[in-house]
Amino acid sequence: MLKRVSVTFNHVTERLTLMISERGNNYGNIRWTWLERNDFSTLKTSVGEALAEQCVLKSSDPSLSK
Image (cartoon, rainbow, N blue to C red; front, side, top):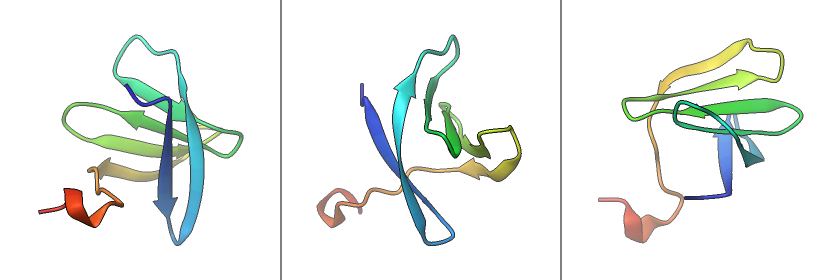
């Protein structure tokens, strides 16, 4: 399980840290929260405003993308 992820939205990248959650993995920092689920994920502001919904993973490593 990853303890940190980097999320990019509107050309801004933030490093988010794993937070405790009963459902899926949640990552966050002072600005954003990333709710990672099996079907899709959601990016929200720290106050709960949805920035992006139905997100899917895109690797930053070209060797992992096919």
